[in-house]
Amino acid sequence: MTTETTPAEPPTGPSGRGRERRRLLRELLLVAGLFTVYKAGRMLSTGRTEEAFRNAARIWDAERTLHLPGEGAVQRLLLHGDTLIQTANTYYAGVHFPATALFLVWLYVRRPGHYLWTRRVLAVLTGAALALHLAFPLAPPRMLRAAGLVDTGQVYGPTVYRAAPATDTLANQFAAMPSLHFGWALMLALGMIAATRSRWRSLWLLHPLVTLLVVVGTANHYWLDALVAAVLLGAALLLVPRPVAGGSRVVAASSPGVTPVTVLQGAAASQSAPPGAGSGEAAFPDAVTTSGAGLPGPRRDRAESAVAGAGSRR
Image (tube, rainbow, N blue to C red; front, top):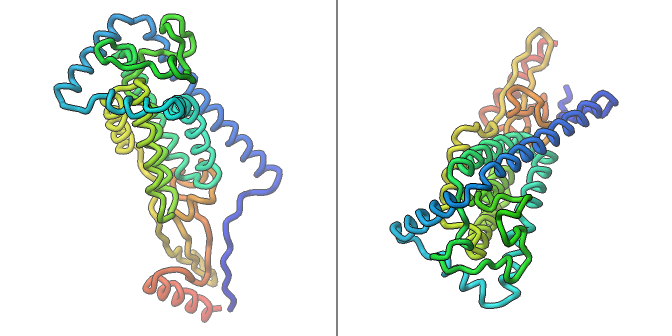
């Protein structure tokens, strides 16, 4: 009796490629649609200037009451040289969206199960952030006179905002609470840690750490903006189930003469199947083996016994 392992392969025929293209197009339209709704929704609170500055004063006073470090301490470190502050401004302006987009593309291609989980978490986080933007307009610390901070984007460049918020038709500068720069960066790090097995994967946490220092040091956000983003992300992670953990199960033969098979599931499976495939879109069978090879000792013994029994009945 021979044994073999047959890896699951994506469909390569015309119908399979057509389904894959439709799935990709659906994901692109969904993500683009969600982002468009978010950007349009943010603009609904652009005219609430007085309320935004009142809330800014409240946040500033709350941070002092909580004895949080002043945002100025971080900014003073960045202002030691023009190159350093311009690098921070560039990071703020140019890393946020491209890094998140590349992260989602990589997950879609390499870790489909984790892609679905991440997309859902980001959707919940961003939806909650939009609701808070509308309910609590907030002027950033660079606009608050009491903070005594420099608008580093306007002074040193580059910047993504116009000098007068009322004339900025592309961005709502009063949507500081929460900081999605930090929230998305933290989810990127957590997603990469969950989806990879490298011993160095914890280094992904440097991205949200650098992002936090940048958004505070450039005076675009308060400490509390990042703290609220982390709380909202934590709530989203509790609401959205994670991909099924690694494991395997032996599927018994349903008729005489049929060899039982072992279906590998979980982390390895989520690396090969396209988003939306399989039950619940979370566990994706990756390979079928008739030998039980690769299983832990007791499971392997049971699988081999089942295979031997089936062979003796042939």
